Length: 278
Image: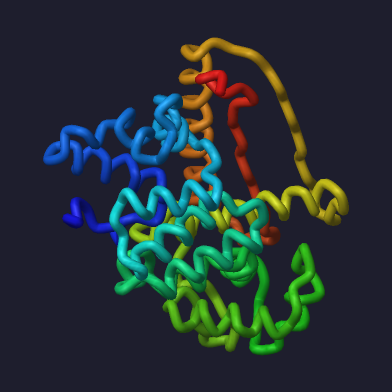
């Protein structure tokens, strides 16, 4: 079967299916969304393929049927299965395992993400240590950091983290023998892989949970608000949050006093209603 689109350009199976269908229907007029439902053995369900694109769970039996109508070889079929596992994983551990497997299967994993970026964002304490180096005088002995960091991190992992920061050029020793960051801040930038950042954010959300259950000694601000508004008001609220983030970055960047604390800030805004009613 003709290879209409390169599966290895994707890490999200739903996006792959969407673009594959759009490319194939140009040469195969029967490969419409309704036609796909017929090929999948669902002649009475015209919306199934559209539902999958919108997030409907795909069973192992239907995964096999998709592989068949897509005409994937064994290697590509395994990659497709792993993309589905990544999308439908129910735990952070399962998501990480699926992402690792996807990297192992990809013919050019650098296309998905930079390995150094993967190492950095794979553990929340790498970014925390990067900030701690600015707030504390840290020598080779990381025991003082291990004593104060929240949540607790084994000393061995902190050493690995410091070695990573040095390798990435993000930290180096000053004349006094203390490790200091070489940059004021880090963004995902060119490493902005959706799955990679998503896994990092999940870890950060877990930190918020732990801070709520076991409040650290430093001040914390925890607030939750559930509300109903129009789509127009939602857009205004989203714009306001973007302005707040910009102002927060400005305040952080303009702070000329010596840092004496490291803080985590997570913003969550999501809907409790499926707009499609599915």
